[in-house]
Image (cartoon, rainbow, N blue to C red; front, side, top):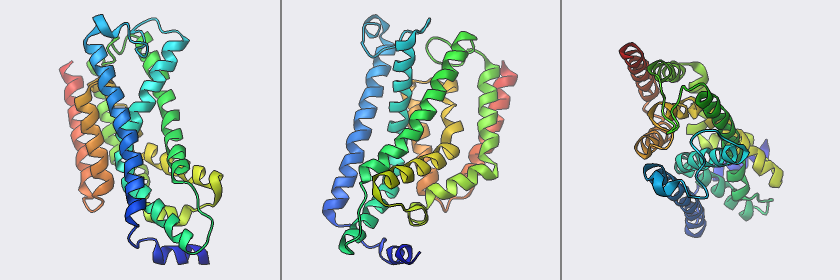
Length: 266
């Protein structure tokens, strides 16, 4: 507890330029590669005469094991592309605490391991999304192009996501995401295993906060880059503008009304 208090008094000091650049460069490189993959996959789906021969392109119907693996990888990379930009304050806070620990001759933990733990949770979510997509495809509720095939499904997903935006669970998870320094100081663990656990726990809060929003990709199109970018920007606004408390509420009401309209229009 004393160590946590000591870190708390110093963790917000300015991070050295070198550490700042290293942390941002790593996140930027990973996010850029993920977005490049999404652009390539989206192009392949729009040009199926070429895309069908891409080694990383799953078949649109009659999936086998390799197709499940490819779709799961697609979801995992997509989640990394969408969530890594919003992790910048948390990663910088983590690097700042590490810097203070180094100055105090305390054990440091690897920032990369923390990020890996975070992405592990989203990889688990990606596996769930893949199985959901497979089931919906089998039931013919989504098209082979990964878009909702029925207004009822689209409307239901919009309403469910909207209602969740208004729940205490949403706001409890969001509170842990918008205060990365508070999370790190209360959850800090030493060692490589500790860094991974911290990342995993932070990722769990983020999935709890944003997971249902990601299911809206079944409404807009799983590989629709415009909607992927829109959801990414919204997630960043929720996390980086905590003073805008009405944002999640407004989004929830909008999604509920939108869902009802879509379902009724079908």
